[in-house]
Amino acid sequence: MLLLATGDVIAYSYAPGRPGFLSGAELLRALPPGAPGAPGTPGAIAVDVVAEDVMAEPSWDMSPSTMLELARRARSAILERGFDGVVITHGTDTLEETAYLVDLLAGRAAERGAIVLTGAVRSLDEPSSDGPRNLASSVVAAADGALRGAGAVVCVNDEVHAARWVAKVDATSVAAFSSAPFPVLGRVTGGRFERLSAPPPRPPVFAGDPASDVALIKTYPGIDPVLLTAVVDAGAQGVVLEGTGVGNVPVELFTTIAELTEWGIPVVVASRCRTSAAPLDEMRHGAGLATRVGAIGARGLAPSKARCALMVALGTGGIDAVRDWFRKL
Image 1 (tube, one colour):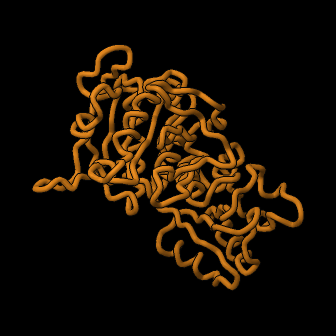
Image 2 (tube, helix red, strand yellow):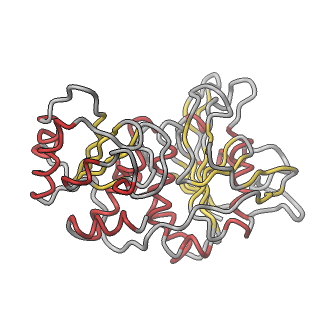
Image 3 (cartoon, helix red, strand yellow):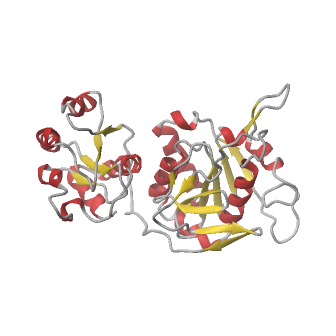
C-alpha cells in the first residue's frame, strides 16, 4: 500500500524543540503499536505501507494543480506501480474537493484498488488527537477488498464516506464530516472494515487533461452580471454559479449566461442546498429556468464539487462535450 502524505494538521507536532510536520514515514511510526500500517505489526492485520511525501500547500489554500497531482499519483500507484491501495493524508478544509477530484480521475484504478483520503481536526500533540486513529482506520479500509469499485472515499472518525456525498459540516469536532442525507459506506470497527451501503454510481469515463481555471461565484439578489464576465476576462475557462433552492439564479444573469454559452464558456448551476441529482431542466415549478439560456445543471453536486466536475468535463472537449458529460454524471 502507498501512503501519500501532504502534511497539514494530521502531521503537525508542537513537540518542544522540534515543532513542525512529521513525514509520512514518521506518521506511520507514530501509530499505536499493533495498529495496521505501524512498523513491525505482526499477524493478520499487518499491512506493508510505503510512505511518500508530497509537497503541498495548506489545505485551505491548496491549488488545483496540487489536487490534480494527487489524483494522478494515486491512479498511477495502482495502475502502473502495482500498489493494491492508496491512502492520502490531507488537511480537512478542502478534503472533500480533493477526494472528489481524485474520484473523477481514478478510472480503472477504482476497480483494482481502494483510494482513501483522511485528515485530522486536532494536531498530534493535542489531547485526544484524532490523527493516528484516522490514519490507522484508513489503512484498514484501504486494505479491504470490499472497497474496490467504490472509487475514492474519505475515512474519518472510523466512518467511510463516498467522495461524491461527503461534506465537512463541523470545523472543530472530530466528527467533522457527514454524508447526510446519504448513508456512510461503512465503518472501521475492531480493526476490520464493515461495509454498510452501496457507493454512488461511478462517474463518466474521462480521458484528457482537466482544466485548472474554473471560477465559482455565489449568487445573490441584485448580483451584477459583470462578475461573470470579469472572471472570464481574467482567464476562467468555465463558471459555476451557486444558486438557491433547486438551482435558481437571479434573472439578471440570464443574458450573460446566454452570451458566455455562445462564446463556448460553460456555465454550471449548482445550489447551496442539498438537491436531487435529476437534470435541472426536469425540475417542476419553474425551476431550472437558467438551462433555457444555456446553463448546465450540476446534477445535485455541491458547488465546490461542481467546480471539480467542470474542471474534468472541460478536458473532454467543447461546451457540447461538457454538457454531455454532465448529463451522464
